[in-house]
Image 1 (cartoon, rainbow, N blue to C red):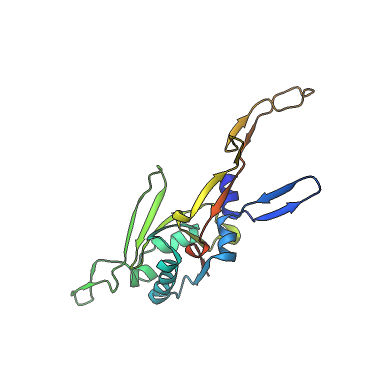
Image 2 (tube, rainbow, N blue to C red):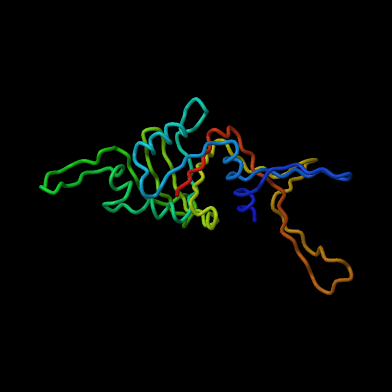
Length: 212
């Protein structure tokens, strides 16, 4: 539930005669409204399109850092990891040396490296793409499916923070409340409650990659 809210939450303020509720944004709708949106196609987007997008996403004047996390759908991760002869990365971005039809060694046309490893969190696979402008760390996000199956979210971690509600010396971060059932209930009810939101700064440092 927390992950879903931090991804897809829609910020709004609702007021009534007795209370006011404020809902914080999730990173995806917030970035679509206030951040940068880059469009690609699986079949025809080329190296120049990618470089143009990275030049803007890593724009130093916007305060962007040199490394970003990318939460990507399964479809985009499939595209990224297909390094065969007909793939975008295989033809234009993979670094290293190959061999021509005549047996002559050839180098890849662009020095962009792609590496695979694991993050500090066990079991989380990371595909790291180093570009001229900065590093993208791709991680598959299972919730990006259905209408979000062709989306990736580029997040500058320097400009997002998890913020639990706090006041009067009390934190509303995740807590377990026990025995909250009414007195006339023959049974027990517990609740896991979190009151927290995502603080997003410098929206121009985040981006949405849309594929078709």
